[in-house]
Structures are given as structure tokens and as C-alpha cells.
Length: 188
Image (cartoon, rainbow, N blue to C red; front, side):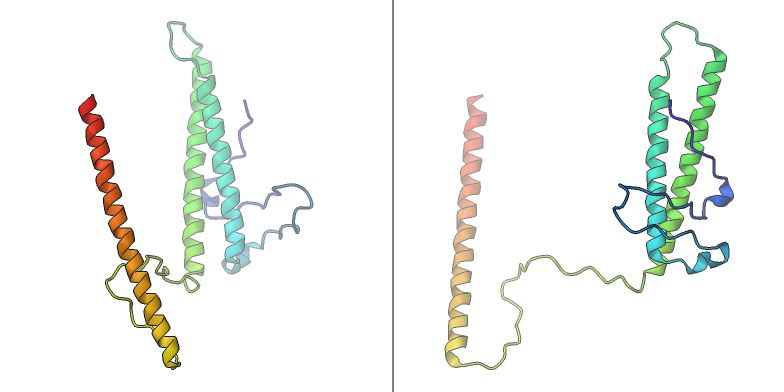
């Protein structure tokens, strides 16, 4: 079984952990050292995200250890197991679950702090839904020649016609699929 991770007390749940090196050596610049305790209020959101990433990795490690403990636990099949072994595994499992809860609390605090620090940078969601109305919203067009605006109107009319043809085809396909499904159901 894997060795348990060092315990972090409840008072450390809101404090960032020491940065750890992840990834292949030479893959990026060296990680910045942890700021002094007085400067914790002045840390950047990037540093908070790095701490959050390490916390997520700790959560995954703890979860894997919990699964290893439960996999190694023998189900009761009539064979009596030593009470000491049972108590040992149960204690390890409880400790891992307690540490997991602390790590999730720490991650929540990091997330809230990051959102708080970057709230001025966040924009509202961009409108990504395609246009679905009857007529297009009027677009401000620079004054242009009569030929250009006439060509634009012709293109818009062609697009409307093609859209109508596509709608008719989709309706026909839908009806055809309904008929096929109905015939297949009747054959059974």
C-alpha cells in the first residue's frame, strides 16, 4: 500500500501548500518560492491557481489511496479477521477521508479567493446562440453604391430561399424517418 501523505492540520486548510515540481525537468521556468506569511494577502491569482492544481493532485492521490485500502480489504466471508487489522485499516480510511474533506475545503477557499480577485476581469457570457428570428437585425451599413446594396439584397433573398428549402427537406426527412420507424415497429 502507498504511504499516507503528511497530515495538514485544520489551521492549514486556508494556507497554501509548498509548491511542488510537476512535469518533466526543464519543461518550464522554476516555480516561484512561497511568499512570506505577511504577503499572503498580496499573492496573485496565478499562484492561487497553481496551489489549487496541487490541491487537486493531492485530492486525486488521497482518493487513489482510499481505493487501494478498500480494494485490499477482504469482504466478510465467514473467515474472522484480526480485530487489530480491521481497526488499523478503518483508522487509515477515516484519516484519509478527514484529510480529503480538508483538501476539498482548501480547494473551495482557493476558488472563492481566485474568483474574488479576478471578478473585475470576468466578462459576461458572449452571445453564442445563432440567430433564430424572422428578420435579421438591422446592420449599420456604410453608404455604398446602389449596385452593392442591390447585390446584398439579392444575396439575402437567396439565403432566405435556401433556408426555406432546407427546412422543407428536414421536415420531409423527419416524416420519412417516422414512417420507417412505424413500419419497423409493425413488422415485430
